[in-house]
Image (cartoon, rainbow, N blue to C red; front, top):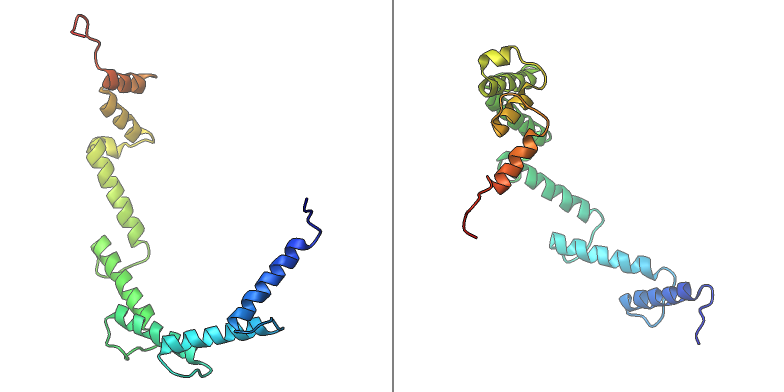
Length: 181
């Protein structure tokens, strides 16, 4: 029978990890600092692959990321590559938001509260279309639910159990007597 001792799993993991790090460095045995050196080489190789350069220089990754972000922003803004200017993204987002707000509200110039006013006007119109203009003018909380239940059940006044009766009636239909089996 094999019994594990305290620390056996930790020792095994330590040994396996060190072996893999040594393999990364193409060495027989792990030495302190090998992991850092392996990660450094991997990150530099990856940076050279991204930049298309044959050698690594400090700052290459930052410059490459900066270039790619600026190109993405110029494309988003509809500008030509290499014409990025500070603030382009903010200006483009602002222009698009203003356009959407104008489209939504039907107004050319946005004023604080326009979206809220438009939503409220649309809500009032919908309530008027659904309940009728007169009922909408005298709207009370629950009127929409009453109308929906009335439309669903076919009853002018709701009574407890009406929805259940309607659902079961729709599922099973009227009972037929004397029909064929």
